[in-house]
Image (cartoon, rainbow over all chains, first blue to last red):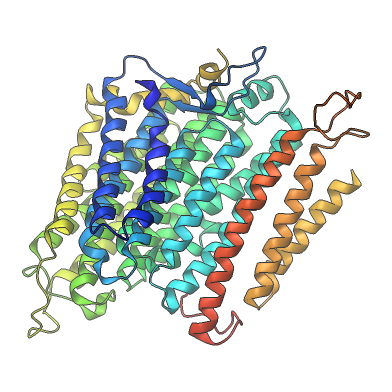
Length: 511
Length: 112
């Protein structure tokens, strides 16, 4: 079964190649191919999550066996965290593509849209699976260059400006990352993450390594839009077509930003209190400032984009508290709780933020505007959009039966039991402001008087869009089950174990 | 050590250009400066004093070769940087068609 691992990269890349070639002659080829590929990959990742007989796999590209114990091949590894990320990426990609079947009809060049989307997903799958630093850089560039083109897909003034800003900052980030990789190679003479981790575990933590770590935090922090590096995110995420906004906000910033930070700092570098503190500070600043910037927004998609920054702050502080406790040799159970909270919030955010962007796209699809002041009274005319967005809003602001409540609760509990009282109170405060901001969203878009009663165009969106929104809304409810014992052991715990046991990753490759 | 410092200074020159120039094309040139400084750095860390080109053949007698891996990395990175630059320039052309200027002070409809 483990021979199917490379399919996560091969299938999307092959689809990206075939869609422009064959799609020109065969009508509907692009839609069928991309949805089938994403559906198959999400089922495959769910299979790996629930039905595997072994904990982790590693796959050598080209079958190059290690020489005298030194790995020379590029490895694809599949451990708890990787499977977890793959499932999120491919599920959200499937729903976004299904939604796009109706939504993207307004644009020309449908083939290019699906091809770029496949390219982006292939790149992200590669970033998540690869065990080689330079290979990670290559896949990361595949994913982000495809996303630059997708942000500019509308080729109007705003889209071009946002894409230019995104590309300049993304270019700086890529160069910082390549610089960091060069520094690592200079020190250790290897690029394999497991091998680097083995060599670094035998060396002292010195200024050189600290400098490298700061370079990596700056590079991947730019990709993940943590607060001093966030300027591109609200423009890029609000200018892209809505299914792409859902992909960018829901998945891309996690796969190429947060995931890599987590993987590198837990499994490659040895944990240190200074870096953990820096990560917690970045997370706290993002969480607090992001929500204050979001409150004043009147453009739906900009409001949602600022909330992405704020919610990523929750994920980062959950992970950061775990890192700090582990590096100080504190209680392992609190660290595990905190990391579980961070990862749980990561998957929850992917689902509800994806859903909210799809809702925003549905509203824009029928009313033609994104300005909250120019809409109102849609609740009766668009019941599906209304009910799903109400669910997602309750999930993001942490109202009990929905998933967002449980992950925030776990993070806050972990912060309190770890002694981070200020962080816990800030997290509660931010949650309340988030609730206020989403009450505003609901009130201005769905309640009140209809702006233009004579307009017959305002009605429920087509089936494909409704299906994706309803499915994601059900996932919002269903993911709450993840905290119950039995399901938690199958999904969340393997991912947490992969991080808690920091040497497990390198022992997977260096047998 | 001086070479590495010069490399880092070239990187900072590029970063300065990206942050202070007003012209879209000059910003792209600044980014290229950063890319080239990183490529130079990668090549330098693979260099060994007096090493030969890493090609195995019967006529070469030395056993001192420079490290070939950074060279392979740089070749890949140049291709990637070319793709990124082509994308940037394509957007710059489109920007000029929409706004009629390359001045980023006049291209400011979005508020960060």
